[in-house]
Structure formats: C-alpha cells, structure tokens
Image 1 (cartoon, rainbow, N blue to C red):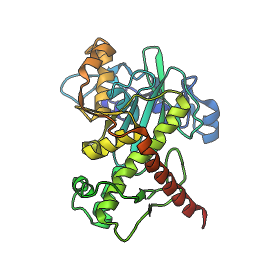
Image 2 (image 1 turned 90 degrees about the vertical axis):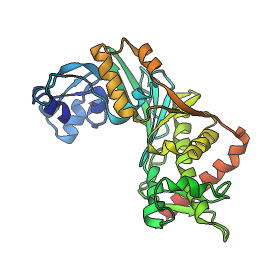
Image 3 (image 1 turned 60 degrees about the horizontal axis):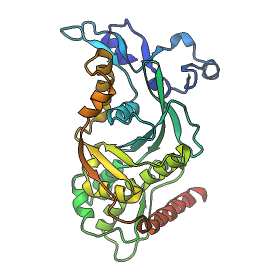
Image 4 (image 1 turned 120 degrees about the vertical axis):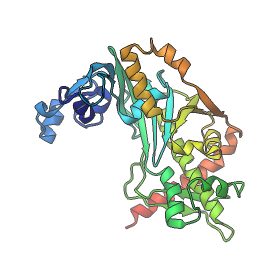
Length: 332
C-alpha cells in the first residue's frame, strides 16, 4: 500500500487480496474487511485501503520515473513466490529456503481450514477467480548455518558448510533441533529452545554441520506431512527457491526424505518473478498462464535416491529429538 501510494503520488490507496489476508482484519471468505475484527482491534474502516485483485492495471506512476509506467501487479511475499514458481494448479507446492523456510501449497478456489496448525490464506485473485493456499512457516533454516559461522565458529563463510558436512557420510545419530526462537509450524511452541541430541565422543564439527543442514529438511518434511493431511493430496514434487537451494547435498537429502522430486528453477528470485508475471498478465505482455508456463524453466531436479523404508529410522530419530526439545520447554 505504501509503495503504490508513493509510486502514484498519493492518488491510489489500495492493496490486493493476498496482502489484505495477512493483516488479521480481512475475511478471506467474503474478500472484504471484517467488521467484527475491526471492532475487536478498534480500527476505523476508513483508514484501510481499497482491496483489489492481484493482477490489474491500478494506475500509472507519477513523477518517480522519466515516463509513465503502469502499476499492475500486487502480491504478498510468499504468494508472489508461489506464483513465480508457476504453482498455479491445485496441489502444487513451493518451499522458499531463506533465513527461515516458507512452504506454500495451492489448494484451489475453496479455502481449507487446517487441522494441523497451518495457515489458510488467499494466494491471489486474477479476474474473478480467487485461489487459496496453505502455508507453514519454519523459523530457523538458513539461520542455523549463520549460527555455525558466527556463534560456533566452525566455518568461515556460509558456503563452507556443504564442504564441512560432506566430511561425514551422515550425522551418525546426531540431531539438531534449531529452535533458537521456538518452533514454528506445525508445532507452534514459542518456549522450545535449540537442542543437539545423540552426541558421542566421536561426534565432530562435521557431524554437527551435517545435522544442522539435515534439520532444514526435517522441518520441511513436518510441514509437508501436515499439508498432505489437510489437503488429502499426495504431493508429486516440491519447487524450491531461496539462498540455501544452491546446496546440492541439502536438496538431495530433501528429496530423499520427502520421497518426491525437488525441482530447482533457473531463476530462484521467484518473489520478484511472481510480481512481474502478475503485472505482465494485466498489461498483456503475456497472453495467459500457458505462455508463462513455457517461460518458466527447470535448472535441476533432485529425485529420491533411497527407498521409502530407509527414511523410517531417520524420521523416527528426528521426532525423538523434537520431543526432547519440547520436553525441555515444559519443565521450567
């Protein structure tokens, strides 16, 4: 809203349905500001921007650039990434690996109320068609690598973690639950704290580094299982983006754990890409989703290299580690 206001020199006070749905003030069923919520938070409706679709020509820039440019696409961060990954069909999933992880599933034109502590949100509205998504947020993903670098001092740069972790075949029973700020979806326990379990006299920095990377994949698995349960859809692939996706060994372990293909596109800055796609649809730069699908390209696909039964003991160990971390939080 602030960006559009400034780009149009104060002529437009608007937002789109995806951003509005993240304010705790919006009814995602009626697609209107919710009177009951406004009363609870004591917010006058007159303060709020007009809610529009995610892809239309809202207006033109004024004074900011040397020529007038249409303002034509608005989307929330993760919704834009979902669209940028061309997850436009029901059941398609993307996961963004940044400081945290944000997994989102397109659930189609009807919202699903999660029974597994996931967020139901508006994905986007194009024309008269509104699509919804389930989202699970992981607080600590790439940040665990930063901790290895800055606090533990076992690597000099984030890029070094893959080389250090590769010194061992596996974590050899070491599990790292990086709950530095509590655990996000699907646990939502703000009191949980970071825990490393399974240490022996033979454990080394390489084992801890491997367990740290593995933790990103395990947390992603937890969210995906919750999405599978809520949607009753078996996922065939996960499209990935974000800084940590350059780590090939992490992406391979992710595919092994999930037992689905992990697909990395050529362009991993998918949030910006999604906003561009939405604007391009509105202005006619692209004729439709079919043309955009052809434009989206795969850089590499990671397929499961182990059998499903081989993941059972790995996942069991992770679940034990999470229970241990949560038990620490309970006994104050």
